[in-house]
Amino acid sequence: MTSICHITIVHTRYDVRIFHKECKSLSKAFEQVNLIVADGLGDEIKDGVNIYDIGKPKSRTDRFLKMSSRALKKAVEIQSEIYHLHDPELLRIALKLKKSGAKVIFDSHEDLPRQIISKPYIPKILRKPIAFFVEIFENRIAKKIDGIVAATPYIRNRFLKIHPNSIDINNYPILDDIKFNNQWNNRTHSIGYIGGIFKTRGIIETLDAIKDTDIKLILAGNFSPESLETECKRHKGWKNVEYLGFLDRKGINELLGKVKIGMVILEATPSYINSLPVKMFEYMAAGLPLIASNFPIWRQIITESNCGICVDQTSPSDIAKAIIKLISNNHLLKQHGINGRKAIEEKYNWEIEEKKLIKYYSSLL
Image (cartoon, rainbow, N blue to C red; front, side, top):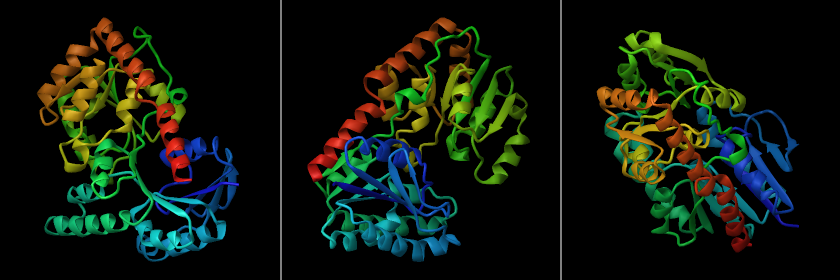
């Protein structure tokens, strides 16, 4: 019996990439799929996946110092043929797992060294040195394990330089998860945003763009830091906002069926420029035109799919012009929406990535 074990001490047990996409997909092809988590919610079997809980860490320090060792102990106890690590912290146990005779792969969700350079809570003078040493550590371990699964082609290309068995498994949407809505007459005079709300994700520029209009922004997600929520609520554009907080999948589908445009206005940070935000593809899957930052990768996707407009993400006036151009033209909105959905069905969906993942695992075994 082939046994596979995914491990995370950072993400939730029902993380979309780890559980809903990778583990559930692999359970269709292999006899036993296990998932080790650290959330204190106990063991369970869910959708064919055996979930093992090693307990919730008491603090971030406790997670860093102790949870990797706990995860290692449980992983060895489970005895799997492949161990799939999802957190950079777990690279410390990768070589110990290899000594058990198993295959070990690392799932790089983000380009961590570039992300560190943009972290506001790390003193600016320390960011580059920390990023430098993190990259050395990641590369050193990555060379010695059996493969790298990357969340984007950019991250894959970074690891291909040091490990030939690197593949991109992209976070594209599961087709059945996103409801396609091609009815434009019932939508409100509004734009939408779903996901974490940070300054680097264009919230202030979007508020600036709509402050002197009658266009509503329907906003879903959690603010980080909390002080940003206070700042936004003081903004002149907040009068145009309907804030819904964190939404489940049902709530997200309702939001995406109500608005006319999906907003993806991210700053040109080193980690964002080469990213593939899940929200962008979820908007497309729902049949929503995009207004997005003018990054080369995004511009290529949006231009080839003909499903939206790229703007200067630093310019509220440029953002406003794009919104106004689209929002009152239902024919143009409908065409962009159909084009976006078509691109998802043909190219940017999890069903394609699932086949790549299963084939990759089969090659390891």
